[in-house]
Length: 204
Image (cartoon, rainbow, N blue to C red):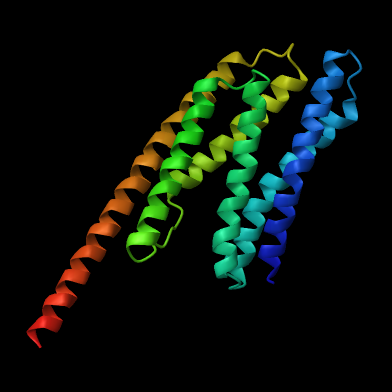
C-alpha cells in the first residue's frame, strides 16, 4: 500500500474521532460542564484531516504513487469527512439546513450518475475540476468557521458565515452541474463509439 493511501486511511479513521469529540463537547456544554480540551482536540483533528487531503494528493503526484485504490479512497474520505461534519453541525444549528441539503443532493446525484454510467457503459474517469477543488476548500472553510462559532458563540461572525455559505452554495451548484454535464457527454461519446465500431464490424 502506498504512503498516500495510508494517509487517506488515517483520515478516514479520524472521522469517528472528530464526530465523538464534537458531540461529547456539546453534551457537556449543555450541562455546563464543557471540557475545553475536547473542543480544541476536535478542531485539531478536523484541521489535520483537512490538511492530510492536500498532503496525500501532493505525495501521489510528486512521487508518482497514484493507484486505483487511491482514486477510490481519496474522494470517499473527503465525502465521509464533509458529509458527517455538515450533518452534525446542521443538527447543532451552526450550519443552515438548506446548505446541508444542497451538499447531500449534489453528492447523491453525482454518485447516482456514476453508478448508472458504470453499469451501462464504460466507467468514467473522474478527475477533480478547479471549481470542484474550490468547492471542497469552501466546504472545509464553512465547517472550520462553524466550529469556531460553536466554540465561541459570543463572536460576531454572522456576516462572514453568511458570505461563506453563499459562496459554497454557488460552487456546489456549478460543480454539480459541470459533473452531470461531463457525465452526459461521456455517455454520449461512448454510445457513438460503440455504434461506429458496430457499423465497422458489420461492414467487414
